[in-house]
Image (cartoon, rainbow, N blue to C red):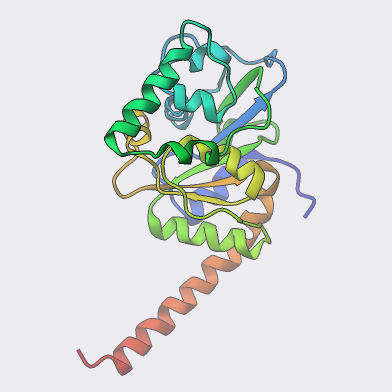
Length: 239
């Protein structure tokens, strides 16, 4: 499908069908800082914290130093920590090992970007002017079901299983595998305010138009199948 990127139109289509409670977030990994966008000024405890700002309407970019507070996020985003911060990666991982949260042998299996980005651009979907690398959707399970079914109908491969911790690995995983469903992790939920009844679907930016087109068919199909299932339940359920 040769549809020109239009973040504002895509946002309207998503809102009409899925009705998410927060804006989808676009993330673009750049080889140079964008000239027409403000740099993030301030401090955040994690890379996924920037998703919260973008979901609330801010467009900005970060550089490597903005991600130094999160050793795990720096790893998944292929960001090299400064020498005085490198020890924090080992300390953070050791804490997770000691808690039984992660096993040492799992670390090499965590997806990460193929190369370090010079800058990372974040924007709400409606404000994203050019095709991003990935789009993050925070959705309730029923909404995530529809979007995942639309991704399958659009032909997106998804060679990865449903993901959990760390949530930030869903971004490089989407670039490699296509549509990713992530249950999130406790750190992400604290840093972003993700609700207990929400989860993520991550799509490559290049595939969003095709998925949204398929979503219209999936919505109609699910509405018809819901009526069909209700009728079957009334007819055949004995309890």
